[in-house]
Image 1 (tube, rainbow over the protein chains, first blue to last red):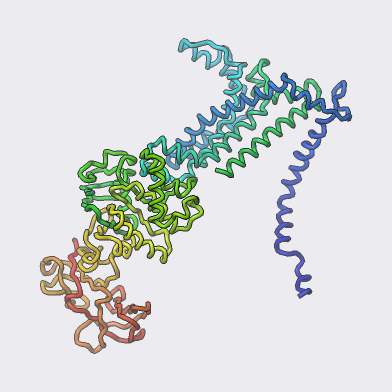
Image 2 (image 1 turned 90 degrees about the vertical axis):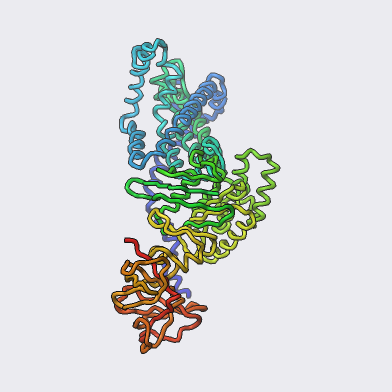
Length: 288
Length: 349
C-alpha cells in the first residue's frame, strides 16, 4: 500500500491545481505588477505629507483624510455622483427599450443591430468626444438645428448637460449589451403564459420581463456608472472650467497641484465607493 | 361549445392548417392527435390567441374568439414547457391569474390554497419552480391553469416532459381532475396511447388536415383512412384492390378476408388492416393463411409479440398472443385472421 502511494508523484487534485497555476500565472503576474503593487503604493501615500515642492515627505499624518471632508471637495464628489447617476438613469431609460427591440428582431437583423451598437468603439474615444465639441458648440449642428426650429441658440457646450451627453454617448452600449443578452435569453413562452393568465402587455413587463432582467439592469447600470463617476476626459473637454468631477480633481492633484498624497486619498475614496457599489450589486443579484 | 370552422394557416410555403373544422362539446375531454409538425399545436395557439388564422372562424359558446386579445379569452393554456415564472414561488405562480382579475387578497389566498390542495402541493407553496421535480412542476402548471376556472383548458403535450412512471400517474390524475372541475379539456399530443387513454374523442391530424374524429374505440377498430390505420396503434397493412366481397385482392397473396367500412366499388384501391392481437398463427400446412417464417419473439409479461417475415410483404407481420409464445424463431407458420377482425380502408387517389 505504502509503495503504491509513493509511486504516484502528485495526487490528481494537486496536479490539477499545478496545471491551473501554470495557466493562471501570466494573468496573475500582470495583475500583481500592474495593479496590486501600484494600488499598495497609492494606499501608502495617503498617510504621508506632501513635500513643499511636490513629492512625498514620509511623515505620518491624517490630514489628507480630514481634507476629504472639506465641503469644497465633498461637493465635487457629490456632484460627480449626481452626474454619474443621472447618466446611468438616462442610459437605462434609453437602453432598455433599445435592447428589448433588438431582442425581438429576426436573427439576421439582430446581428446588424448589435454591430451598429458596438461600431462607435472602433473609433478612438478622444476623437469621438472632440466630435461632440463640434456638434454642441455655438455654431454647431445642435444649435443651428434649434435655431431653425426657432428655439435657439442656447448654450450647450461647457455645461453639465454636455457632460451627461458625452458620458451617455460613450457608455450607452455598455448598458444595451447586457440587457440585450438577458432579454434575448428570456423564454418567450413566459410572456405568453402571462398574457394567457389575463395580464396586459404592461403588467407582463412589470411582473415578468422586468423582474427577470433585473440582474442585467444592475450589471448595465454598474457598467455605465463606474466609468462615468471617475471620468475626467469628458468633463475636461465638454464641461469647460466651470464644472469639475472627481476624476478631474484627482488628475489636478497629481499633475497640477503636485499634491500626490491628497490625490491618492481622493483616488482611494473613489475606489472604495465603487467597490462598495459592486458589493451591493452582487448582493442584490444573488437575492434576485 | 368550441367551434372551429374552416381554419387555415400558412407559414410561407408550409400549410400548417388546411380548412380545419371541429366542434368540441361542453365538458368533453378532447384530444388533437398527430405526428409532430401536423399543425395541432398551431391550432391550439390560434384558439389561445398567439397565432391568427389566414381564414376561418373560432367561436366559444357562440362568441367570436378571434377578435379578442389573448389576455381577454376565458381560456387557459398549459404550455409544453410549463412556462412557470422562475422568480415566483409556487403560490405566487398560481395566484398570478387571480391577481390579474383583481380579486381580493383573501379570496386569492383561499382559492390558491384550495387548488394546491387538489393537486397535492400544499406543502410546496413556498418553493421556487427550480426546487421542484418535473412531475411537481407539471402539477403547478396545471394548478395555475385551472385556478382561474376557465371555460376551456388547452394542454400542449402535457405529459411529454415526464418519465414513463410519473406519466402514468399523471394521466390518471388529469382524468380525475377533469371529472372534478368539469372544465372542457383539449389536449394536444403525438402519443396515441396517451390520447386513447385520456380522451372522450380524438381528432387525428395529418399534414394540417383532420383525418378522422372519433371515440378511441371506434378510431382503433374502424380507422377511416390509411393514415389513421397506420398511426393509431400497431397495425398490419396489406395493399390491394376492393373485391366487392368481404376482403381485398392482393397481388402477392390473392384474396385476403376483411370487412369494408364503406361501400367500395370493385377494383378500387384499398388497404386491409388487421391488428396484431387478431392475428392467429397456424401450422405451415394449414389450408388458409399467408405463409411466412418467425423472425423474432419478444416476451412482455402479459403478452408476447411475434414478428413473422412474409415473403412478398415489405414489413414483418406482427402478432400478439397472450402469455408466453409457443413458437421459436425460424419456425415455418401461416398467419391468418377472421374476416370480421380485419377492416378494409379506401385509399384516396
